[in-house]
Image 1 (cartoon, one colour):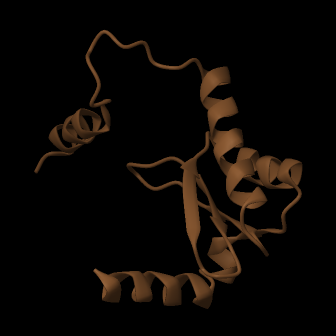
Image 2 (cartoon, helix red, strand yellow):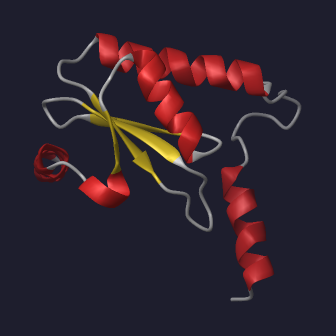
Length: 117
C-alpha cells in the first residue's frame, strides 16, 4: 500500500465517531481532559509510575501510567518532553520505556485480562 494511502486511512480511523458537526476540543481543553484522566487514575490506584513512549510513524509520543496491580492507561502527548513534564507535575516516578522496557506487572495484568475474556 502506498504511504499516502496508509496515512489517509489512518486519518480516517482517527476521526471522531460523533456527528461531523461536533467541535473538536481546543488544545487547552484536550490538555485539561488528559490531565484530569491521568490525575483520576493516579488518585484511585496505588504505586502508579509513568512511562514515556517514543513516537512512531503513526502515533505521537504517549504517556503510559501503570499501577502496582499492572492496570494501565495511555494518553497521547505532543512530544516526549511534555510527557516527562506531565509526570513530574502529577508527582509520579517517570521512566523512558526505551531504556527500561515495560514493567512485568503490566504484561502479567494484560495476560490475566485476556484469560478472563
